[in-house]
Image (cartoon, rainbow, N blue to C red):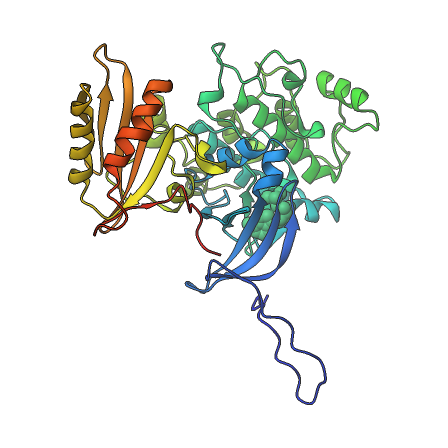
Length: 451
Ligand code: AMP
């Protein structure tokens, strides 16, 4: 499909006025047309003028997201999606922000929603199997990295132009940090018809089991063309879900019937696992060893790393900040600065050498009779300033932004005296007056790329 959405040249002799020029965001993304609406966002087809590549641009108004309490969903979605790389998971390529909106630059799924296909009628069993395999491969990969989607449904499954599945919308997904002491998740979420029974009884649930249940509902819908649990009365629908009360349509093969039964098992303890699904005869039917191995690839060294606690927390210390960090000025999962920086932290960009900045931090701490020490590794250096009893007064971290540019992040230890030290002593010492050569520009004053 051509997607050169530029202004059409006026026909010769035509009296029509030329259409207004297509909007170009950040001097780079030319908006072509609207692809769809979400709960809090519009998604546009856009052309990246730098690469010539077509992308999907999801525009999330900051104000609306904050008002609807969705800021943390956006932040979580970024934190999660930036870590996921799988052929059947929609890639988040970049995050940009203007004063009023956050933009996700996403891999384009030209085929639209899988839901639209099912809405036209049920799918043949072989086609359902193909989508289901791709879904399980993606879900297994997420689980092996400690990510649980929690809102799997055909509307969140997009298709690329080759008809391959792309799981999207990680706004409700959970990561290990959200698991409570009992090892379970407790947030009520999901879409009613796809929600697992254990979410309804509010005693906590295992994110992996809940995703497997939703995969069962999806498989049922692909095969039947309608929902397994449905009732105009929500309570009656929940009762059916709770009891696992559904009937497969008569065209369902016995093997598929059996698998759906294992997926839609209301007891999470006996419900089939992703490993079990991979070994299931209906799932494996006609699948060569190599194809099977490719689908089950998530069982790799990465899983072992996760079990060793390495994967989720790991950040390569010696890397320049990327676009995600620039917008959020985040480290690890802490993207809380996205909707406004916390008051006890300030960041600025400097063209000075890191050593000069850190030395001034040390001098200022020592001058105030505090204890100072260096911390950090290559590419991420810092100074910690402590009181005489080891209490944190302030910390300074310096990261490489680009050649010759650094981001300096200074934070106080919480408390009035600490805040005073940060604002009145440390920050003025760290920043070179704007008139001097090698001066710093405060990015908290202008945190947004220009649109
Ligand atoms: P969302 O806000 O993510 O639910 O997206 C709203 C709608 O926009 C989706 O239901 C799709 O129809 C469309 N959409 C979202 N992301 C993409 C994408 N990467 N490629 C194509 N269409 C998309």
